[in-house]
Image (cartoon, rainbow, N blue to C red; front, top):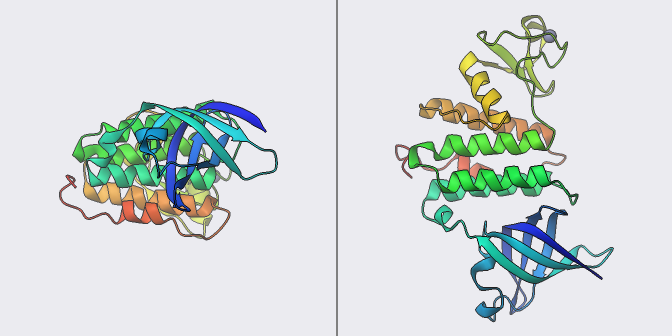
Length: 255
Ligand SMILES: [Zn+2]
C-alpha cells in the first residue's frame, strides 16, 4: 500500500453501507480515482464539508496496486465552490463538466488538464446568470482541448488546407472538425457553422472568453458539443448530467 498526496476535486459522491461514502475524484497526479471515505456519513468531524461536490483540496489516498478503490485518509479543503449550489444553471453546468471529466479522463497524471477542469468550475461558480451557459461551453471545450480531442477550426479536417475565418464552414464530427469548401461538398453529413460560431470555438479551445448573446446560439452550441462528445465516447452510455444541463428550463437565462 502506498500513500498518494495530490490536489483533488470531488466530482461524484454516493452513500456506501451504513456509514461511508464512495467518491469519484479527479486528481492532479493520478487522474480520476474512486475512493472510499470510511465513516464519512457517521461522523461529520471526520471529513467535514470537504467531501461536498466540486470541493477542491489536498487528498491523501491509500492506494493498493491492482485495487480499483482507494481509501481516503484525509481531505483538506482549499476551495469549497459553494456558489455552485446557489443557482440551478451553475450546478447543472458544473455537473456537465464533471460528467465529461469522468467519461474521458483516465488515471494518469495530467496537471494541465486538472487545472483546466478546476478553472472551468471556478468560472462557472462566479459566472453571472446570463453567462453561465456559455461559460460552461467554454470550460467544456477547454477541457476537451487539454484532452487532445479538440476539433480543427481553421484547417480542413480532411485535406488540411486553410479555411478563411470569415467564411461559413461545414463541420463534420466523423472527420474531426471544420471542412474546406471542397471537402464540405463531398461530406455525407455535417452542420454548417457560421463564422461567429467558429470564432467562439476558436476562443474557447484556447482558453479565451467569448460571450454568446442569443438563446438560439447557445442551444446550437450545446447541440454541437453533445454531438462531438457522442462521436468521441467509446460507449453508448447516456450523458445524463449533460442532458439535464442542455434541457434545463429556460427562464430568460436567470435560472
Ligand atoms: Zn478540405
